[in-house]
Length: 455
Image 1 (cartoon, rainbow, N blue to C red):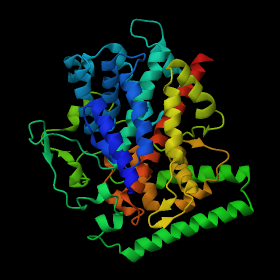
Image 2 (cartoon, rainbow, N blue to C red):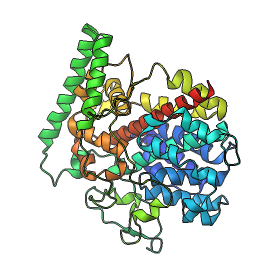
Image 3 (tube, rainbow, N blue to C red):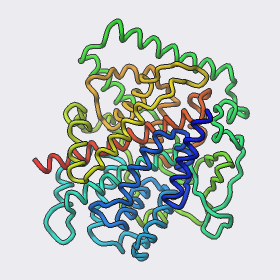
């Protein structure tokens, strides 16, 4: 990294520490992209700490409920601490049976948004806001929905980036140091490429990953040339979307059911002092107290042999023209902060790909973002989904689907298996795109349901 980039990164980390009193591992990993991190911290600070419809303890308890859908102990423990610091009632941490009924009533929408957001309807909204002592006001509900979507998506980033909890030296809190044997101590800090960091012990050679990189570059050039020559018709685009949506169900992730400790641990450089959970102390039971119906999970939108759900045409309900104004009207200013964050990650580029410079990566970034939305049934009429199939090879699709739909199953092998010549910062950038695409997809479904309730 350049000296000015390092200075900017250091300044941002010091500022975050002075504000929050801690420097968590999420912030450290995201600091590889300081422009994005600044936008992320601003929006998260607003939804957790600034004036808003929900009391502070409610905000952190909702974060716990959201993280629990993906068994994300890292986020759960972080917000258990914050819940208590902000005056939360300790008894609530015993489980949902100890919380107010109105909080328990969020269970259904938490479950649907986390795993099958296309099932959220105006009836779910009406049930939550109906008159009664346990009802939610619309501003409160929008605040809650933003928090749920934020922490579902952040769980994807945590698992996708292999982030483990930061804790002090002893194991009294149920954590233990892990040995770091896959990455050089300074790989992530210095943003070395994945080739040098993690491939010395597997079967992929440097020539293989270099040819993989060149093949991707050639496909990008060819697609750009074809686009300039002749664009696909709307009918052809629709056909390619349905094909991509249907084929996404054939992308099989590792394991048939979520299992917290069934895969190899995902380790990061020791310079970040990352730690891992002690298997004997933490269990899935500790998570299940915060959710209901723990077996409910992602179900392929395009699953064959079942009732076909209508495609969500993005042009009919867009973030820019519909979601943004609704969320801003009911929860002042959060729309601007979220919009800035979405635009930041979508447009973020250094015009590099691994060792190549002066590269226009727009096509690749859009393919990553739109593939996530495709898995949630969202179609953009102006996008040619043939590009997704050309640019995202199978191992990358497996990684994307796992991180987005089943993040708790993510393994280091998946992380290593795609784009083997790329730098850590580039793979973190991928995870940021996946996280924000997922959050926006959840918000689109939830906000469309709220809009239908209001009309």
